[in-house]
Length: 362
Image 1 (tube, rainbow, N blue to C red):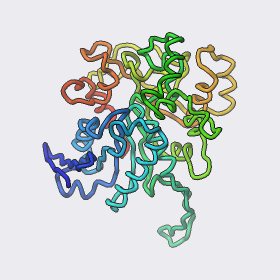
Image 2 (image 1 turned 30 degrees about the horizontal axis):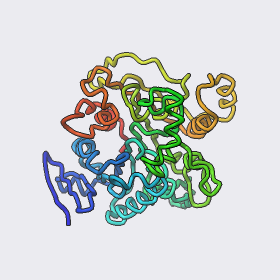
Image 3 (image 1 turned 120 degrees about the vertical axis):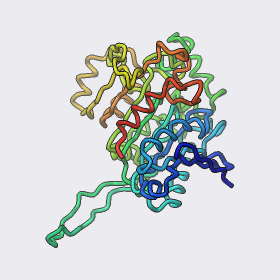
Image 4 (image 1 turned 180 degrees about the vertical axis):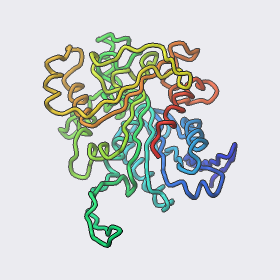
Protein backbone atom coordinates (compact mmCIF):
# COMPACT_ATOMS: atom_id res chain seq x y z
CA UNK A 1 0.00 0.00 0.00
CA UNK A 2 1.33 3.44 -0.90
CA UNK A 3 0.53 7.00 0.04
CA UNK A 4 0.85 9.40 -2.89
CA UNK A 5 1.21 13.16 -2.78
CA UNK A 6 1.70 15.96 -5.28
CA UNK A 7 3.13 19.43 -4.68
CA UNK A 8 4.51 22.06 -7.07
CA UNK A 9 4.51 19.61 -9.95
CA UNK A 10 6.42 16.98 -7.99
CA UNK A 11 4.75 13.65 -7.23
CA UNK A 12 5.96 11.34 -4.48
CA UNK A 13 4.88 8.04 -3.03
CA UNK A 14 5.78 6.45 0.26
CA UNK A 15 5.16 2.76 0.83
CA UNK A 16 4.38 1.10 4.14
CA UNK A 17 7.96 -0.16 4.33
CA UNK A 18 9.28 3.41 4.12
CA UNK A 19 10.53 3.64 0.53
CA UNK A 20 10.09 7.00 -1.16
CA UNK A 21 9.89 7.58 -4.91
CA UNK A 22 9.83 11.08 -6.42
CA UNK A 23 9.01 12.02 -10.03
CA UNK A 24 7.40 14.74 -12.14
CA UNK A 25 3.60 14.90 -12.05
CA UNK A 26 3.55 15.87 -15.73
CA UNK A 27 2.97 12.68 -17.74
CA UNK A 28 5.19 13.69 -20.64
CA UNK A 29 8.06 14.39 -18.24
CA UNK A 30 7.66 11.22 -16.21
CA UNK A 31 7.52 9.10 -19.36
CA UNK A 32 10.74 10.58 -20.74
CA UNK A 33 12.63 10.41 -17.42
CA UNK A 34 15.07 7.53 -17.95
CA UNK A 35 17.71 8.40 -15.37
CA UNK A 36 17.40 6.56 -12.04
CA UNK A 37 18.85 8.46 -9.08
CA UNK A 38 19.36 6.33 -5.97
CA UNK A 39 19.64 8.35 -2.75
CA UNK A 40 21.14 6.59 0.26
CA UNK A 41 20.89 7.81 3.86
CA UNK A 42 23.43 7.51 6.65
CA UNK A 43 23.62 5.64 9.95
CA UNK A 44 20.34 5.39 11.91
CA UNK A 45 18.70 7.31 9.06
CA UNK A 46 15.63 6.84 6.89
CA UNK A 47 14.41 7.52 3.36
CA UNK A 48 12.91 10.84 4.52
CA UNK A 49 16.45 12.20 5.13
CA UNK A 50 16.70 12.88 1.39
CA UNK A 51 13.14 14.21 0.97
CA UNK A 52 14.26 17.79 0.27
CA UNK A 53 17.10 16.75 -2.02
CA UNK A 54 14.91 14.34 -4.01
CA UNK A 55 12.22 16.97 -4.57
CA UNK A 56 14.76 19.56 -5.69
CA UNK A 57 16.24 17.13 -8.22
CA UNK A 58 12.83 16.48 -9.77
CA UNK A 59 11.86 20.18 -9.76
CA UNK A 60 15.01 21.09 -11.67
CA UNK A 61 15.24 17.98 -13.89
CA UNK A 62 11.59 16.91 -14.29
CA UNK A 63 11.94 15.17 -17.65
CA UNK A 64 15.28 13.57 -16.83
CA UNK A 65 15.22 11.84 -13.44
CA UNK A 66 13.24 9.39 -11.37
CA UNK A 67 14.45 9.47 -7.76
CA UNK A 68 14.31 6.54 -5.35
CA UNK A 69 15.20 7.14 -1.70
CA UNK A 70 16.50 3.84 -0.31
CA UNK A 71 14.61 2.17 2.54
CA UNK A 72 16.10 -1.30 2.97
CA UNK A 73 18.60 -0.17 5.63
CA UNK A 74 16.65 2.22 7.81
CA UNK A 75 17.18 2.91 11.52
CA UNK A 76 18.85 0.05 13.44
CA UNK A 77 19.39 -1.94 10.25
CA UNK A 78 22.27 0.48 9.55
CA UNK A 79 24.18 -1.25 12.36
CA UNK A 80 24.38 -4.61 10.56
CA UNK A 81 27.56 -3.82 8.65
CA UNK A 82 28.50 -2.14 5.37
CA UNK A 83 28.48 -5.45 3.50
CA UNK A 84 25.05 -6.56 4.73
CA UNK A 85 23.61 -3.13 3.95
CA UNK A 86 25.30 -3.20 0.56
CA UNK A 87 23.68 -6.51 -0.31
CA UNK A 88 20.26 -5.16 0.67
CA UNK A 89 20.78 -2.02 -1.42
CA UNK A 90 21.86 -4.16 -4.38
CA UNK A 91 18.60 -6.11 -4.25
CA UNK A 92 16.59 -2.90 -3.82
CA UNK A 93 18.15 -1.29 -6.90
CA UNK A 94 17.58 -4.39 -9.03
CA UNK A 95 13.93 -4.45 -7.94
CA UNK A 96 13.48 -0.82 -9.06
CA UNK A 97 15.14 -1.52 -12.42
CA UNK A 98 12.81 -4.47 -13.00
CA UNK A 99 9.77 -2.35 -12.17
CA UNK A 100 10.78 0.42 -14.61
CA UNK A 101 11.96 -0.99 -17.94
CA UNK A 102 12.31 2.50 -19.48
CA UNK A 103 15.35 3.33 -17.33
CA UNK A 104 18.64 3.77 -19.21
CA UNK A 105 20.99 5.54 -16.77
CA UNK A 106 21.82 5.38 -13.08
CA UNK A 107 23.43 7.70 -10.52
CA UNK A 108 23.96 7.51 -6.76
CA UNK A 109 23.78 10.29 -4.18
CA UNK A 110 24.75 9.04 -0.72
CA UNK A 111 25.20 10.62 2.71
CA UNK A 112 27.64 9.59 5.45
CA UNK A 113 28.06 5.81 5.82
CA UNK A 114 25.60 5.51 2.92
CA UNK A 115 28.52 6.41 0.66
CA UNK A 116 30.33 3.23 1.71
CA UNK A 117 27.15 1.18 1.32
CA UNK A 118 26.69 2.60 -2.21
CA UNK A 119 30.31 1.77 -3.09
CA UNK A 120 29.73 -1.81 -1.95
CA UNK A 121 26.44 -2.07 -3.85
CA UNK A 122 27.84 -0.85 -7.18
CA UNK A 123 30.54 -3.51 -6.87
CA UNK A 124 27.78 -6.11 -6.77
CA UNK A 125 25.67 -4.43 -9.46
CA UNK A 126 28.54 -4.19 -11.94
CA UNK A 127 28.04 -6.14 -15.16
CA UNK A 128 31.17 -6.74 -17.30
CA UNK A 129 31.21 -5.32 -20.84
CA UNK A 130 29.94 -7.31 -23.81
CA UNK A 131 31.41 -6.69 -27.23
CA UNK A 132 28.80 -5.43 -29.67
CA UNK A 133 28.95 -5.25 -33.46
CA UNK A 134 26.82 -2.53 -35.05
CA UNK A 135 26.35 -1.31 -38.58
CA UNK A 136 27.19 2.27 -39.47
CA UNK A 137 25.17 4.41 -41.90
CA UNK A 138 26.98 2.92 -44.92
CA UNK A 139 26.14 -0.62 -43.88
CA UNK A 140 29.64 -1.50 -42.72
CA UNK A 141 29.91 -3.51 -39.54
CA UNK A 142 32.08 -2.04 -36.80
CA UNK A 143 32.95 -3.04 -33.31
CA UNK A 144 31.92 -0.70 -30.52
CA UNK A 145 34.24 -0.41 -27.56
CA UNK A 146 32.40 -2.36 -24.86
CA UNK A 147 31.50 -0.76 -21.54
CA UNK A 148 30.28 -2.38 -18.38
CA UNK A 149 27.02 -1.38 -16.74
CA UNK A 150 25.53 -0.98 -13.28
CA UNK A 151 22.58 -3.34 -13.18
CA UNK A 152 22.30 -3.04 -16.95
CA UNK A 153 22.21 0.77 -16.85
CA UNK A 154 24.73 3.40 -17.93
CA UNK A 155 26.70 4.69 -14.92
CA UNK A 156 26.76 8.49 -14.76
CA UNK A 157 27.21 10.27 -11.38
CA UNK A 158 28.54 8.78 -8.15
CA UNK A 159 28.20 11.43 -5.43
CA UNK A 160 28.93 11.11 -1.72
CA UNK A 161 28.19 13.70 0.95
CA UNK A 162 30.26 13.69 4.17
CA UNK A 163 31.14 9.99 3.78
CA UNK A 164 34.03 8.38 5.74
CA UNK A 165 35.89 6.75 2.83
CA UNK A 166 39.07 6.31 4.87
CA UNK A 167 37.17 4.97 7.85
CA UNK A 168 36.88 6.66 11.22
CA UNK A 169 39.83 5.45 13.27
CA UNK A 170 42.53 7.90 12.19
CA UNK A 171 43.56 11.07 13.99
CA UNK A 172 40.70 13.63 13.89
CA UNK A 173 38.62 11.41 11.61
CA UNK A 174 35.82 11.63 14.20
CA UNK A 175 36.10 15.29 15.28
CA UNK A 176 34.02 15.01 18.46
CA UNK A 177 36.90 12.94 19.93
CA UNK A 178 38.95 16.18 19.73
CA UNK A 179 41.96 14.51 18.13
CA UNK A 180 42.97 13.05 21.53
CA UNK A 181 44.84 9.80 20.79
CA UNK A 182 43.66 8.09 23.98
CA UNK A 183 40.02 8.84 23.15
CA UNK A 184 40.45 7.62 19.58
CA UNK A 185 42.09 4.36 20.68
CA UNK A 186 39.38 3.78 23.27
CA UNK A 187 36.69 4.41 20.65
CA UNK A 188 38.22 1.75 18.39
CA UNK A 189 37.89 -0.78 21.22
CA UNK A 190 34.30 -0.06 22.22
CA UNK A 191 32.63 1.25 19.05
CA UNK A 192 31.18 -2.18 18.20
CA UNK A 193 29.17 -2.07 21.45
CA UNK A 194 27.29 0.94 20.08
CA UNK A 195 27.35 0.61 16.29
CA UNK A 196 27.91 -3.17 16.09
CA UNK A 197 29.39 -4.52 12.81
CA UNK A 198 29.11 -1.14 11.09
CA UNK A 199 31.27 0.36 13.85
CA UNK A 200 33.91 -2.30 13.29
CA UNK A 201 33.93 -1.61 9.56
CA UNK A 202 34.25 2.15 10.14
CA UNK A 203 37.09 1.78 12.67
CA UNK A 204 38.81 -0.90 10.52
CA UNK A 205 38.79 -3.44 13.36
CA UNK A 206 37.14 -6.20 11.32
CA UNK A 207 40.40 -7.73 10.07
CA UNK A 208 39.81 -10.91 12.10
CA UNK A 209 36.74 -11.83 10.01
CA UNK A 210 37.85 -15.13 8.40
CA UNK A 211 41.42 -13.86 8.25
CA UNK A 212 40.56 -11.23 5.63
CA UNK A 213 41.75 -7.60 5.68
CA UNK A 214 39.27 -4.89 6.79
CA UNK A 215 36.30 -4.55 4.46
CA UNK A 216 37.23 -1.01 3.39
CA UNK A 217 40.59 -2.35 2.21
CA UNK A 218 38.90 -5.23 0.38
CA UNK A 219 36.80 -2.64 -1.45
CA UNK A 220 39.93 -1.27 -3.15
CA UNK A 221 40.11 -4.25 -5.51
CA UNK A 222 38.03 -6.52 -7.72
CA UNK A 223 37.83 -10.18 -6.71
CA UNK A 224 35.47 -13.10 -7.31
CA UNK A 225 32.05 -11.54 -8.01
CA UNK A 226 32.93 -8.22 -6.42
CA UNK A 227 33.92 -5.48 -8.89
CA UNK A 228 34.43 -2.59 -6.49
CA UNK A 229 37.00 -0.58 -8.44
CA UNK A 230 35.75 -1.50 -11.92
CA UNK A 231 32.32 -0.24 -10.91
CA UNK A 232 33.65 2.99 -9.42
CA UNK A 233 35.79 3.63 -12.50
CA UNK A 234 32.75 3.15 -14.73
CA UNK A 235 30.98 6.34 -13.59
CA UNK A 236 31.48 9.45 -15.70
CA UNK A 237 31.77 11.56 -12.53
CA UNK A 238 32.84 10.74 -8.97
CA UNK A 239 32.18 13.57 -6.57
CA UNK A 240 32.98 14.17 -2.89
CA UNK A 241 31.16 16.85 -0.88
CA UNK A 242 32.94 17.42 2.43
CA UNK A 243 32.55 19.65 5.47
CA UNK A 244 35.79 21.49 6.24
CA UNK A 245 34.75 22.09 9.86
CA UNK A 246 31.98 21.64 12.44
CA UNK A 247 31.10 18.14 11.22
CA UNK A 248 31.52 16.27 14.50
CA UNK A 249 30.78 12.87 12.95
CA UNK A 250 32.95 12.66 9.80
CA UNK A 251 36.24 14.51 9.46
CA UNK A 252 37.35 16.55 6.45
CA UNK A 253 40.25 14.25 5.55
CA UNK A 254 38.23 11.01 5.39
CA UNK A 255 35.30 12.53 3.50
CA UNK A 256 37.53 14.18 0.89
CA UNK A 257 40.06 11.30 0.53
CA UNK A 258 43.07 13.46 1.31
CA UNK A 259 46.17 13.33 3.47
CA UNK A 260 46.66 16.08 6.07
CA UNK A 261 49.25 17.74 3.84
CA UNK A 262 46.74 17.85 0.96
CA UNK A 263 43.96 19.69 2.78
CA UNK A 264 43.64 23.04 0.97
CA UNK A 265 43.54 26.50 2.48
CA UNK A 266 40.06 27.81 1.90
CA UNK A 267 38.56 31.28 2.02
CA UNK A 268 35.08 32.76 2.30
CA UNK A 269 32.94 31.95 -0.73
CA UNK A 270 32.41 34.87 -3.09
CA UNK A 271 29.78 32.99 -5.10
CA UNK A 272 26.29 34.22 -4.25
CA UNK A 273 24.69 31.12 -5.79
CA UNK A 274 26.69 28.75 -3.58
CA UNK A 275 27.70 30.72 -0.47
CA UNK A 276 28.82 27.62 1.43
CA UNK A 277 31.04 26.12 -1.30
CA UNK A 278 34.52 27.31 -0.31
CA UNK A 279 36.85 25.20 -2.47
CA UNK A 280 36.62 23.01 -5.58
CA UNK A 281 39.27 20.68 -6.90
CA UNK A 282 39.38 18.25 -9.80
CA UNK A 283 41.84 15.46 -9.00
CA UNK A 284 43.10 13.24 -11.78
CA UNK A 285 43.71 9.54 -11.24
CA UNK A 286 47.04 8.97 -9.48
CA UNK A 287 49.46 6.34 -10.85
CA UNK A 288 52.06 4.21 -9.10
CA UNK A 289 54.96 6.61 -9.84
CA UNK A 290 53.12 9.43 -8.09
CA UNK A 291 52.61 7.21 -5.04
CA UNK A 292 56.35 6.86 -4.57
CA UNK A 293 56.75 10.65 -4.60
CA UNK A 294 53.93 11.06 -2.10
CA UNK A 295 55.40 8.46 0.25
CA UNK A 296 58.69 10.32 0.46
CA UNK A 297 56.81 13.51 1.33
CA UNK A 298 54.40 11.95 3.83
CA UNK A 299 54.18 13.97 7.03
CA UNK A 300 53.65 10.87 9.14
CA UNK A 301 50.23 11.92 10.39
CA UNK A 302 48.32 9.02 8.86
CA UNK A 303 48.79 5.31 9.56
CA UNK A 304 49.77 2.76 6.95
CA UNK A 305 46.26 1.39 6.39
CA UNK A 306 44.83 4.86 5.90
CA UNK A 307 47.60 5.55 3.37
CA UNK A 308 46.64 2.38 1.49
CA UNK A 309 43.02 3.56 1.35
CA UNK A 310 44.05 6.99 0.04
CA UNK A 311 46.26 5.43 -2.62
CA UNK A 312 43.71 2.84 -3.67
CA UNK A 313 40.86 5.32 -4.02
CA UNK A 314 43.09 7.83 -5.81
CA UNK A 315 43.46 5.43 -8.74
CA UNK A 316 40.31 7.05 -10.12
CA UNK A 317 39.61 10.74 -10.64
CA UNK A 318 37.48 12.72 -8.18
CA UNK A 319 35.80 16.09 -8.04
CA UNK A 320 36.25 17.40 -4.50
CA UNK A 321 33.81 20.04 -3.27
CA UNK A 322 34.60 21.54 0.15
CA UNK A 323 31.79 23.10 2.16
CA UNK A 324 31.80 25.39 5.20
CA UNK A 325 28.91 26.43 7.44
CA UNK A 326 31.20 28.31 9.85
CA UNK A 327 28.95 31.41 9.80
CA UNK A 328 25.69 29.45 9.92
CA UNK A 329 23.40 29.35 12.93
CA UNK A 330 23.29 25.58 12.54
CA UNK A 331 27.04 25.09 11.99
CA UNK A 332 27.30 22.51 14.80
CA UNK A 333 24.84 20.35 12.83
CA UNK A 334 26.97 20.57 9.66
CA UNK A 335 26.76 16.80 9.12
CA UNK A 336 22.99 17.13 8.62
CA UNK A 337 22.92 20.64 7.13
CA UNK A 338 25.08 19.61 4.15
CA UNK A 339 22.33 17.11 3.23
CA UNK A 340 19.38 19.31 4.29
CA UNK A 341 18.14 16.40 6.37
CA UNK A 342 15.33 18.57 7.73
CA UNK A 343 13.89 21.22 5.41
CA UNK A 344 13.26 23.67 8.26
CA UNK A 345 16.25 23.20 10.56
CA UNK A 346 18.89 22.55 7.89
CA UNK A 347 17.74 24.73 4.99
CA UNK A 348 21.06 26.64 4.93
CA UNK A 349 22.51 23.67 3.07
CA UNK A 350 20.14 24.20 0.11
CA UNK A 351 22.92 25.79 -1.96
CA UNK A 352 24.92 22.56 -1.70
CA UNK A 353 21.98 20.61 -3.16
CA UNK A 354 21.66 23.32 -5.82
CA UNK A 355 25.35 22.95 -6.71
CA UNK A 356 24.89 19.19 -6.93
CA UNK A 357 21.98 19.53 -9.37
CA UNK A 358 23.62 22.26 -11.48
CA UNK A 359 26.64 20.03 -12.12
CA UNK A 360 24.71 16.78 -12.47
CA UNK A 361 25.23 14.93 -15.74
CA UNK A 362 21.95 13.70 -17.16
